[in-house]
Image (cartoon, rainbow, N blue to C red; front, side):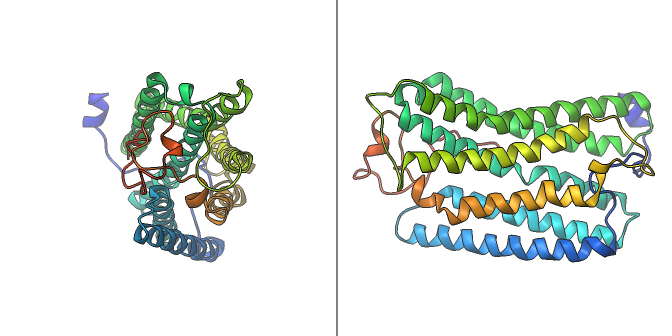
Length: 311
């Protein structure tokens, strides 16, 4: 490995087909411009919700995370537009490809946090169990690890022509993308435990609206994330194809549908259903009974109740 790095040159342009291929002025720039406008609108909306809630001492950090996700996507689209005008710039291509995979991680984390809240309300003894809480923290750290693995392997792969190194980079990418797919499925597991286990005598309610409605919101958002992660995993696991002979799943249509279109639907779901009201919990909730104790806690400034995700 070290010998390969010492002899590396490049960066070398990819010889295999990738999702969406290299962007071109037409149709990529107009399509990216439309998606940028949508993400800007959702960024403004979620920041407005976050600030209005904050001013009335009702801090809902997940709205800020949705804003961050939108800003990451705006950056992704800007890089793709610039790449379309400089198709031979390999460094630019690397940055654009990395951001495509990195931005959605925030939504994966949001889904799991919301599902955790549902489990803790429906099954407090299980949801607040130390094993479950600490296990969630490990999962968040591993999300950060998966992102680092993807970035590192992607960068190394364009600076070497060594077949062994390239194969190792592909193995790392397959491991990371598979973990992300598994991570997206975890909220459904939480929901199943919350609703299929015998009803707890300590069951609580939190936020506004019915628990069934909350369950439907999380389920829909999770299924869309599973679609996104599953498509990416399927493309990554497929045998590499020459850049001159891409498969149907490498097309620009698939790239925009299974990435940005699905993400916009998720943003519509999480923003317009007002998760800031439905999933609000008292600040500092750490044990069964805390979700019902709104009189003692009025904000959600820190996420001590929720395991902090790795960046």
